[in-house]
Length: 48
Image 1 (cartoon, rainbow, N blue to C red):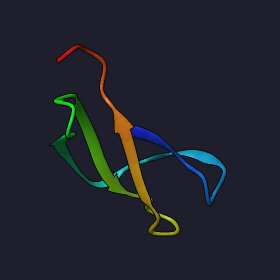
Image 2: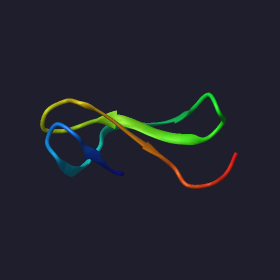
Image 3: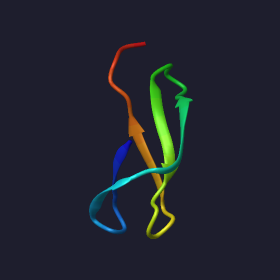
Image 4: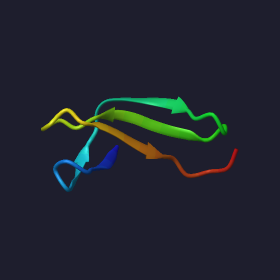
C-alpha cells in the first residue's frame, strides 16, 4: 500500500501496514515510512 510521507515529500510503500477502522466507521491503512519511520495513514475508498 502506497501513502504520501510528509517528511520525505514522496510517495512510499508502507512498512508494517495494518487495517484500522476510524471513529466514523471508515476503513484506513496505518503504517510507517520505510526510510524515516514517520507514521503514514491512508483512508480507504468505500462508504460506511
